[in-house]
Length: 259
Image (tube, rainbow, N blue to C red; front, side, top):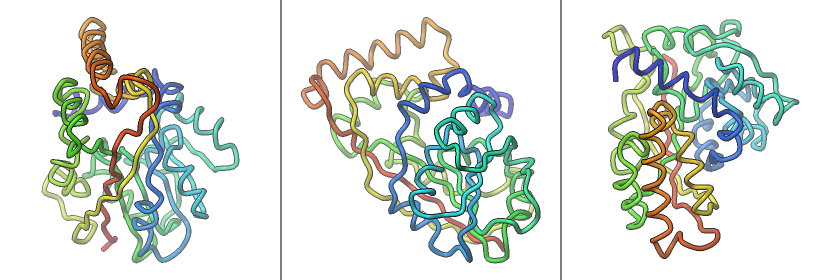
């Protein structure tokens, strides 16, 4: 994905902010706890916070959280759902916080949108010495047969290689590094995946997939055709055809320390 395409995808979520907040999953608490384990203190920046899915988990774990989000519609939803959280407009490339003001920076399904040549120094700037940077990704567990079938029928624009455990490690292993060859600001990465799941119906799973960037930027006819294929697959699959079911997931974490 080139820079222009990445920016198009990254900026696509605002139009679906309400649906995003309603349908996107939270994050496995064990994954968030592991991400924060080496942090030297409780101050956490949720960077690219969206509507606050990760923010809410951080609050539940007792972290001292500030959220930063560039999209006004997403930020509005975050403020509505989590009014007690300090939530600021800003981006990974321009973080509106002082130097060494947080002990950890976490990014939920967001780090792959960052321009790490610019964001890396910014994140390092706001981190205290010994601070932690962690990216978290919720992935559908395609080791389960029906989930693998869903991924195939959906196509890579809807469920891509970063969205399944088969390839998320390779896809995210260098997400903390600048693509320009500039010096890295962080140490060696660690990656661990934690079991997770989301209660869905066929309709609500289609609605969840419809909030993915690859689907949001599709031409309308292609989007409707893709969602129609997914809907037909779920209707014809015993595990998903009737009522609620648990979508098998993992929360994958990439964790690095500030150098």
